[in-house]
Image (cartoon, rainbow, N blue to C red):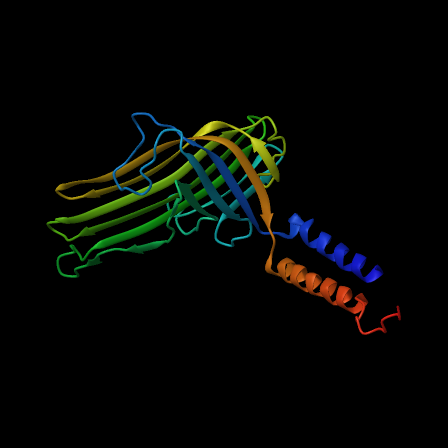
Length: 261
């Protein structure tokens, strides 16, 4: 029995130590707002009024090329070329509506034309990919903001650029709750919400109108939880195995003599 209690204590430690976690899961649920601004030319979701949604954000709290700020007045984690060149987003995000899930893309790439040495003119295409991610907590306003976005562009070629393409997408929430009392954006729990959100995806192509998806979202609940690190998961797996071994060791063998009737 003492061995089982020791293993259970080890499992409790694995689950009750969010401070060691570097990733945090933010799950926002609510309904699609059906108004004149909600439509889906990309046919990703084809949402209808009142349909439920789930938005998931994973925040990496220790990504070396992201920007972090913590203080009594609030905290934030942000990054991406759109925000500051040379940084990367600490967020990944997805949106699920009607059983269809769309993952916000990520990446960072920049390629520019070379300069012709004789004329000084740029030669070749321009290609850019930028990601954006941000989580920011304002305890004074009882507000938490979550944003994940992606932008790419292609243009070719000087001196007559007739091959131009651009695409942008963003998932953005401004959430309000009286329970947002901690300045730390990693405050764990489940919170009832007011606020708003939207998902937008657009494309522009030379001589073409492109396509647009613009979906407005009404959030009602947020759950924030730490994602256990690999070491914690290994501790959990080993602990479950040890409990099984102890139970098997204490189980009667079933080979004793049957009493005579």
